[in-house]
Length: 80
Length: 157
Image 1 (cartoon, helix red, strand yellow):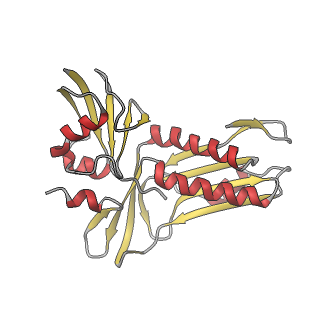
Image 2 (cartoon, chains in turn blue, yellow; image 1 turned 180 degrees about the vertical axis):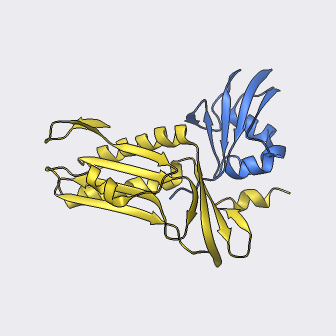
C-alpha cells in the first residue's frame, strides 16, 4: 500500500469538493490515481486532455508513483 | 535561459510571472528596452465579451503557480533556442477579470523583427496548451463554465 496526497484543481476541485486528500491505496502509476479518484473528480478522460504532475514536476499518466508522492490532477488547461 | 546582453553588460533573464495584479503593458515593454534590439513584438490576450454564443461578463483565472512557472521557463528556453532573441517576458493574470482586461502578455525584443514575431507566437501558443492555468467564464444568464472542460463535465453526474 502507498500513501499518496492527491490535489484537485479548477473543475476537478469543484467536483471533488476538496482541494486535496491523502489516500492509502494500491497504485503503480499516475493513471491508477486518476482511475481511483474518478468518483471524486468525475472525469472519464484520463489521458486525452487532462494533465498530471507529481511533486510539482509535469509527468505522464504512465509515470510510476511512490509512497509519499503528491499527485496533482489537472483538468484540460485554458490559459491565455 | 540566462545570458548577457551586449549593452549594458547586465545579467538578464527571460522571465515568466503569474500575478493577481493588473497587467500594465507599457511598464512591461520598458523592461525589454535594449540598445541591441532592432525589433520588439508583443501579444496581449484580452477578456472577450462572447464565447460560443454566450455573452461573457467576466473571466476567472486559476493557476497553479509552481508548475506554471517551471513549465513557462521551459517554453521560454525553447523559444530562445528556436528563435534566438535578446529577451522575452511573459505575464499571466489570475483572479476575476472584467471584459477588456489584459489576461496574458508576451513580449520579445530581438535584433531583427523575424525572431521577435516567431518567438512571441511560439510562446503564446505553447503556454495556452501547457501551463496549468484554467479559466471559468461567467455568463450574462447567471451560469458559469470552465473553458475546455465540457467533455469532462459530460461524464460527471
